[in-house]
Image (cartoon, rainbow, N blue to C red):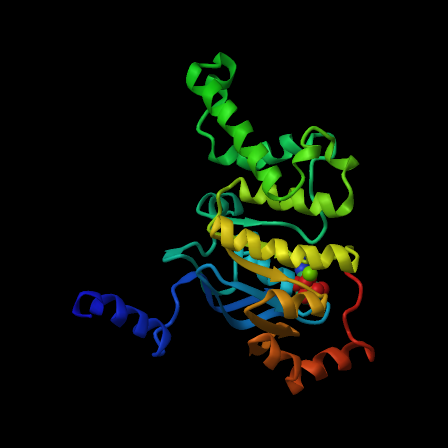
Length: 283
Ligand SMILES: Nc1ncnc2c1ncn2[C@@H]1O[C@H](COP(=O)(O)OP(=O)(O)O)[C@@H](O)[C@H]1O
Ligand SMILES: [Mg+2]
């Protein structure tokens, strides 16, 4: 008993008290203005280590804008973004990516005339050390790096379930497979955090259901922390450990999916927007 006291105490610290879980990423006091429009107003947000959290809200709520702040595409007018304990506010997307943040896009962005495998290799490129000179000279070190890169690309394509089409041009892949390829390419960065912007948009219900399982596998087997923007509510409710709701650039609710589903302000934000369920088509 006394032997395990330290471990027991640690467990008690994380389960029985208010000690916060370690964070993979956090943003505080984020404000973004476009001219006179406040697209994001003073929003705090965290991604727990190995958590799966989601960001929802009516179209125009500011979800993609917020993503763009996390990834370094937009510099916030106010606020701070931390990746682990590192302040990445205002860093370039390339730099933030190299520090462990990978993303997919609301509209699929793949290189159509490259094979699936080549698309993953492109995702890996910023982590490879070979520069132009070594590429031209093709030193043994560079050849080994290239071989290892291809092996890792194949492993990732197998992992996301599209190993069989590794040599197909990405434009010939089915829509669902292109979405998986985007995830493989993002994972090629060996990220700590993965951001998925509306990953199930355009999927049928069966594909969406499989994607939910897939997201859990990505977290469990690759150890990444995941933030999704999602507008399919059945996906949000099944995939997320925590849901944050934005409306007109403000955080109006945050909590476990069951709570969010019955939150008055959330229901109102969605119903008030379009008079239907409010999950309109993308911009
Ligand atoms: N680059 C931009 N310049 C000006 N306004 C923008 C820009 N990007 C987004 N907006 C505006 O910011 C608001 C939030 O947009 P967005 O983040 O795309 O919403 P969502 O992803 O939740 O649908 C909208 O009013 C949109 O028109
Ligand atoms: Mg968006």
